[in-house]
Image 1 (tube, rainbow, N blue to C red):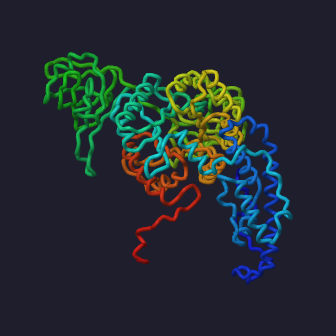
Image 2 (tube, helix red, strand yellow; image 1 turned 45 degrees about the horizontal axis):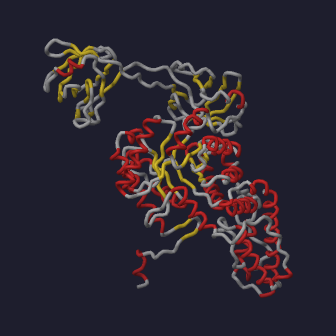
Image 3 (cartoon, rainbow, N blue to C red; image 1 turned 180 degrees about the vertical axis):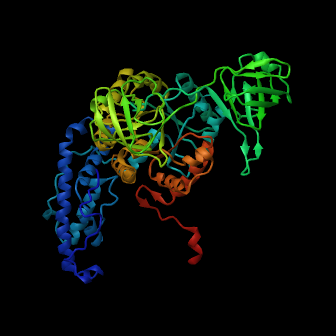
Length: 636
């Protein structure tokens, strides 16, 4: 699959070609000779494909008949890409013949067409050309590859929208469980597939989200598919000792230090209808908050012992909205005095999340023990590791990345209960190492199933309620077989399957994993670019995602382009220019996924607009020459 760069990526001039040939002045005899030479080279390439087909017969025989043609084409494509055909491509193009650059959807038919063209150009009779036997073939004529891919996309991801064949998948936030209006707005804006992550929330919340999706379908007359992610064996840092139970509020100041907006906070229950931005702290006695009145002054000594005065803005009974022109640290058990001499006592506040600040050159020790790690001012730092298999499979010298690649490390020692890491790269002022952050070991062969015990416990719910199950951290053909066996055991063979490619192992094993998945009715692939970029290296990410797109097109498998699409827009309300270009490039996939954020509906609308515009310009690797209105006046 990987493209081998044997010549540094530069085109090499053919010294045998004269100056006249470079300008297209080629004699008929020379053209025939060159066509004959290229004919032999393409025949040799076709022979490689046929031999690959014959070797793959055991896998092909297990494929669902519906996918037989696709599986054969997948084998054909992998066979061609096992060869370096760049010189052949250049020579074919120089002769005015297809350069094989767009053969993904139908490899053998493309090779046959090139062979026939070269035969005619070489002046050879059909009976004089010995074409390799085709090997295993599907029964009947069948659909063209592009049509098969469109059929598979509709079956997996539902019908497309007018003017937009690329579907939009959206990750549900936890709030979607209690906000049917949000879900309806997402469907109205253009969401085609709702994604629910089983790593968050639980069956009660998932059921509520599903109910809202089905209600939105009915209200808007639109079909929406539901995909549920299994969490998989995510490797994460362990817990860190909690910090103090405090809540800090501070006013907004201008550049001169003058307060422009006082700090606000709810004592007791918040009322979002009055102020949904102010945080809230519990009060032990509800009767005390009910007795407060607007304009009243409350006094306290905060967690630092600083005297503070709070002014009551609103008193709803269950809650009191207060403001202060100074910074205040509220703490569990703190007493707040009222003008009538009574006191309210603050209830239990959540502990402040703590972290370890690591720098290049520091030592981090991953431990099997998941006891909360103590906070230290300097290394060596110790923190738990969530996956026990790591301590058996990791090796000295292998790389390790923490928190989406923010901290780059090298393994310097491995013991039965500890792995020692040397920090090679972090931020200029260090990087915060927090609990629950992902650890990537791209060169470690982790002998762990992609289907965890927790995933197995979630599968019955997913099989009953969802349309698609997304399998996380799938690395091997056996991982895929394990999932299919579990679905057969549950008794649901109608649930569609998507393989999330987010590790180097998953990328390298993608062809056999797809052949295994093709035993099923409908299958897709998600390019999970977050973990995959960390695993492969950011500089290689563009190459890897292209190769996945090509391979899946050869197998007529729909692809979901995922992770950080319009991330700034969804989270902050304004996209970066690079994100818009990235979203446009996602149009080559069959589906583009958005992550959650407060502006997710705006992001869906923007993505819908981008994809509709790009629809007229590109389809997979082909440029579509639609009319460009901006330049029309030059010729009218």
